[in-house]
Image (cartoon, rainbow, N blue to C red; front, side, top):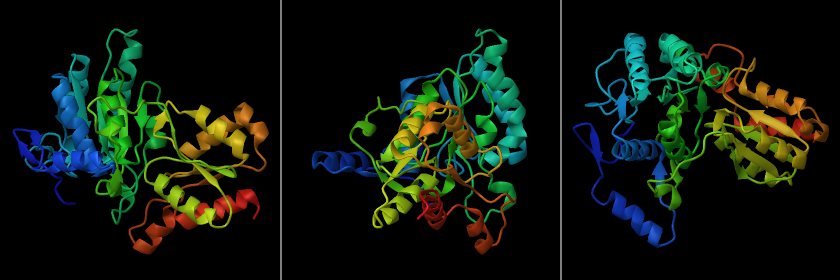
Length: 352
């Protein structure tokens, strides 16, 4: 991945010459500037480091190398040390600091899962609220490209299962910046599941999102596209696939409402229910495995609530294949939800 714009000095990033000026110039012209997810994350980190002296970064290769994917933290830990530096970060949060703990990939968080679940997630409850643990665990999650079974898992359902954690999953640059800032300011442990393949993708970023006060509220989904025939609910990279599928289906007269969950826990089921009541059809899309997944939870919540009576057909899930991720590209492609799979699911639920 190319290095992000900006120079690093003593662990802080300095703006690239002309970078901020260029964005302001575009804003004056009424054009929303394009900002990559990586740069949006770095904006959030810089602003929160400046805003609150209790915030600090801890992780792998994040000082000299500037972060595993050019999103920063501290340098010099190997993957087998994850439990160690995660424990240091959790202890620091208990002592009143606000650490941002980076995993090179969330697959490595399994080596630190005792710290995340038993220490971070449960301490506030077990101390009757006396010991909050304001920490952010962030890094790339889910399938990338060509990294096979041990580096391709989606942990949304894993961490979303655990009370005491908040779990967010951004898609766009605005999601990434706003959710990271909200996570750092939150007094609870927050797991932020990013996607490696999105880091270099540019998105339009509104003038509002350029503000240092911009945050995306945790627990609130966003309707990315309005529609009347079927509701598509997704998070992270598959949100883009849903929008692509919706554009194709619109040419055939099918109007899809696309919901970007943004937050896995607490889940904004109210926005999903309101959409299903309008469209009468539901398709969930995720990169993770099907059993006990995010889509399964959405379907269960819809079935248990008032929106179930408005469904004209069974809900359909589009998920990753129920196998460890293969290394061969053609097999990998068939294990990850594609646009064609979403289109097929929509036509199935609409019986067309």
